Length: 145
Image (cartoon, rainbow, N blue to C red; front, side, top):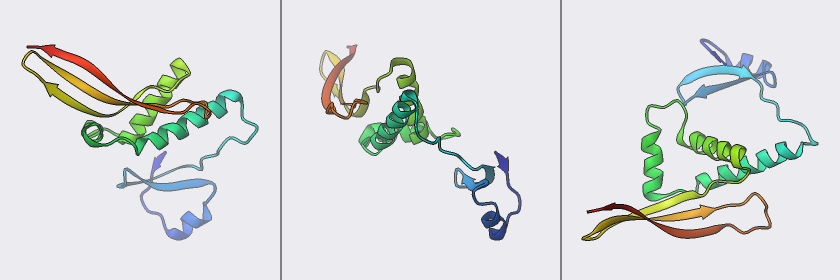
């Protein structure tokens, strides 16, 4: 990747298919080699990785409320956007475990006289398209008073 100083629309069109010009984080104009998608037939591992990436990308839009706000706040000042970090975590978990990590969609904190508990809404997605996804609640104990 290289930072671009001065480029015209004519030069961009001339280099289309060889050099990819875009704005990094919507601010800094940069150029890189034109990305190439691997051509079929894919290996089983490549096909599975592509499926996991697609699942992770689809799950980004399902995160809401307090979890979404936490992702956004956590990405402030970082080079990667929160969706990129989210996908990276999902892909890293898949690489180590060959399954998709459970995804927290939302949480609620419940405080009683004796303790504090968190109730999580969890999404469990599977690589095998024949297995239906599951959404369930999980309560965790945080602290005793």
